[in-house]
Image (tube, rainbow over all chains, first blue to last red; front, side, top):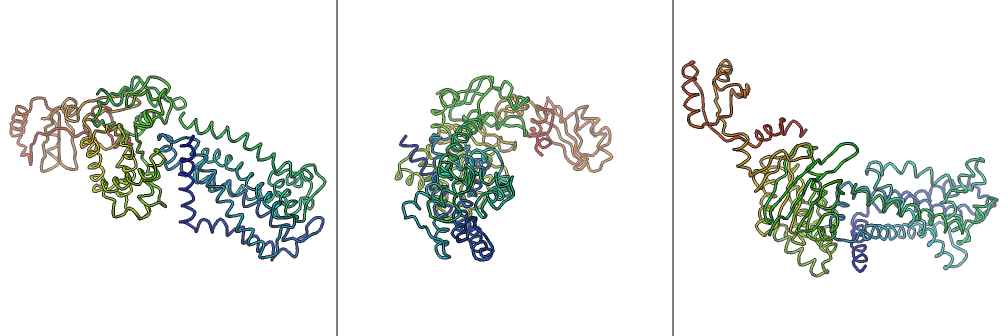
Length: 259
Length: 313
């Protein structure tokens, strides 16, 4: 067990050194949300309506946090499939290191990385007029919900990363992008056509974003649907469901590498 | 000590195809065994099973005295695997790569650091220790990758095509390192498509074809057993090739590009005399006549019925 902790840390440290030494990648990851905040917040912002009224930038920021977190699944996929492709995963498996360490290390590195992204994005938001109005504690709970979702996405990322080649992992962005838009991230679902509205309301990402808006005291909270009204509950449940499904699937997939 | 690697009747199926179909192997401790064969012969599958990375569908195997299925963790503590791809982390320095693996093999921080320095020294990487691996040459990366396999002084080292894609100078470097660790007592199981590599390194060669052992023995033994000696006649112009082929008998191989005809012979000097006089009688003036031992390429052809290079592509 002690070794599991050391192994996790050694594996996580490897990834963190990557982020530190190759800041280009971190910037590339951050550039998109920051530019989006500027474009949607400052350029389109004046033309955007928040259902129920309120400042668009305040509405937008939790959505951007959510999208950044959701894109993390692509990062995890990429790292996992690259390790598998380069034979690093095999080296890990042929060594006496604890197998928990491999995935736990992955989770730690990804969570640290995502926390950093949230922090930069939040600072950027504060500069252009976003704020949290319900106290620091509620704000921290909101960030914890984002990281809880990120943790769940680590497991989806590990599973999918073991399933596909790095080239396919790279292309996952094309699917992720619309998935993060068919949600309450940029526009209130109430303003969407009927079928899309249902999709957006039940999108797991919407639950976390809606819960965060509530905790931050930002506008755009509420709605008629059960999903919208119970966003806090769903923001806890959805990730739990993902973990319950993809944790065992990942473990199985990992074991089946020896098929 | 007995056998460092022992496999009996290994079977492994991928979908409907048997990648291994009753594969046997016995490698005495402290020796180098070369697994030779074309792509798809089952070399990598065999190594992956022995390194506990693949489950087997039949038979049994012991590595370093432990069963690869029931005692996989014990096997993992005593073996190292060096695969076809480099697992060197480009962003980390050479030293950091080694320390990372040392830590994963559960050395303390200090031990891992000391061992890393030792290995960097041994593998001639001390000067580049604090450079990121992405600035390393192909040969240096390969050496760093090898060094990381030696952290625990494994009793068995699996090398899966260690020099594929390296230039001749770097291949030589890798061969030197392999010989050095063998001298320290490590048993090496080496897979390769290069016959000269097996010839250089291996005490024992096992030729695989379609999931089984097609032949085995020492490099010299295999050559003399399978090919026997060959007589080779070089002529000045192409017209004479059929005449020479006729003299050398039905097994003669004609290479029109180099004006060369060769054939296996059993009786060395007697054959030389016979061929020389037969050629003189037919008025053929040979450029060169020589007896030589077969190359492993020819041995391979004789065993498997196809050239190593044909399947390789």
